[in-house]
Image 1 (cartoon, rainbow, N blue to C red):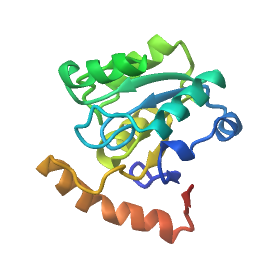
Image 2 (image 1 turned 135 degrees about the vertical axis):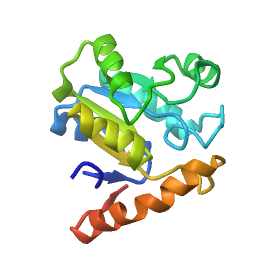
Image 3 (image 1 turned 60 degrees about the horizontal axis):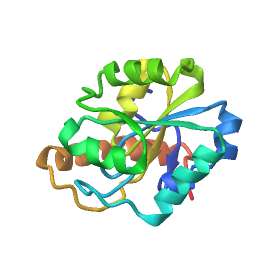
Image 4 (image 1 turned 120 degrees about the horizontal axis):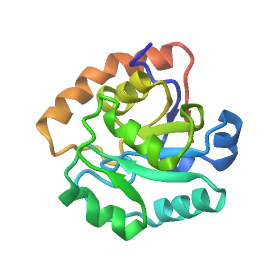
Length: 169
């Protein structure tokens, strides 16, 4: 199904290079808010910085694809040394198309990492790549529209767990 997560991770740190190798994934497209950092935050947890270093050391290509403006994403991406695609228009796959071209990998080697079903998961589905869904880093979203979407995501998350899905830690 387009919206039910394929796999859920507690956070990005739970995604390992070994698991990516099993999946044949060599490139990750990363969301920012509530995926790499808290909602609207410019701070990067030490554990996420270590995870990024681990991914780089394993040869995993990384880029950011965000619906936020360049003004929001640029300082964050520059500080952590990642290229980025702002105003990605997710769930449309436009940002993923740009990211794939920049990364120079086939779709089969790419995965989207994000915390929202109606943007990240749906964009990945429409583009034909795997989505590694992560639980939001913070419990409170500042954006009222995102809060509404979180309530609408609940049936899809319940469907995942009802079918035997687990949260990978």
